[in-house]
Amino acid sequence: MKKYALITVFFMSALIGVAQEKPNIIWLMAEDMSTDLECYGMAAVKTPNLNKMADEGIRFDNCFVTNPICSPSRSAMMVGAHQVKINAHHHRSNRDVPLNENFKPFTYWLREAGYTTILGHHGVMGKGRKTDMNFKAENIGPWDGKTKFGLFDKYDTFEKKDQPFFAQIQLVASHRGDWWDTVREESKHPVNPDEVVLPAYMADDPVIRLDWAKYLDQIEYLDNEVGMIFKELEEKGMADNTVVIFIGDNGRCNVRGKGYLQDPGLRIPLIVYYPKELKGAQVRKDVVSATDITASILDFAGVDIPDYMTGKPIFKNDFKRDYVYGARDLWDEIEEKSRAVTSGKWAYIRNDKPEVPYDAHQAYLEFYRPAVHIMRRLYAEGKLDENQKPFFEPTKPKEELYDLEKDPQELHNLASNPAYSEILNQLRKRTLAYDEEMKPVSSVYHPVHAISVDVMEWVKKERPEEYQRMLDGVEIGFKAMTEGYKKSLK
Image (tube, rainbow, N blue to C red):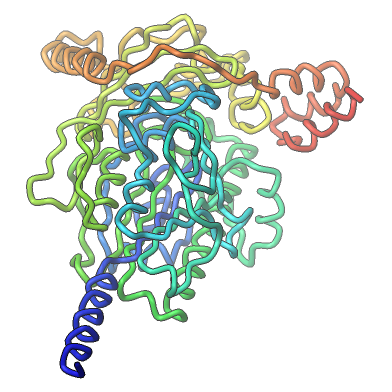
């Protein structure tokens, strides 16, 4: 009897050992950030914790989201399938519509594999609990896709008893918000506006330089949050068996960034840290889609990749992606339809609504883009150069083609240059093929009314002095103005 008891104990211990071999996984998702870290070469910013993560991990230089706006991009990553395919491509839409039964959030599969799924973190700004799905979902609870729509098991804390765990933590600081001035004021070394290096498509103006410096202040703030999370892993004895992934959910919230299919809107940082299994100090140049990150998380967890996923595990020996297919559709009150492919070398954009300008005076963005207000005035005064004017023209080109190796800032549209007709035609066909491949499973379209439209009209009418400050490049505070508008309705 004693012999069998010993065998049972040994067997159970072996099982526990196997279970503990599964790595914990933390997905750090910085909001509205292009590759604007020190380890990617961004001037004037200091990101020692992310630099260390890159030095000891793998930095990817050609990772792209499939949509440059938060909710479609996050929806694609949550399912591991392109947002157009799952009919989640319109921003803040279909919130009442269950995900098509052929798809599931990737956290469902992690739970099936024995993972505790965690949303947010107790120590980061705002607790980091944003999900923002364009299908019916709840943050916490079980999932069956019919009557239960929970994405995660619990909030904010990871403990040894949760192992193996998956934690998705949003780092909100880099998102435009009323905290930007406070973060800068409390910084021990605020970024010097004179030291920032603006892209050529931005006007060199003191207001724009200060705005860029404030953005970099937020990046330094969240870099400290990354360091805090690593410290917690060390203190809890879980650092050695935890994969940490750092990304942006879409590009920076500025000219050509968030909301646009140009490179600053689609290209995001991606750093993967897992010294136990992955050799550090690597820089990979292969093309990666954000949905590939989802597939890679399942692969780390030992989960077979569902057939419906358009993402592929990036650490498999046979991983290869030629292009990332990008799409831009509804964003608040702006009806839009543009498609793109990028290979890291070439970027092609097809604008199906060229009559909708880049600067569409979208209400929400009016509160949060000082550079647009300044450059809009300079455009009217004829003071923008040829690199800066296109964003403010009354229409967009029907097609855009850029050589990212020779022209990384996409200053020269080659679509009308006969010398590039062959590559233009190739990418045009590739985009059309993706259009068919990613055809939506449903045509249901339930957009949410954007309150920013109402707030903007109220500010113009009831707060003309504040509106003028906005035109002068001051962020007057969307949250504060929204609260004022709501009070006026009572």
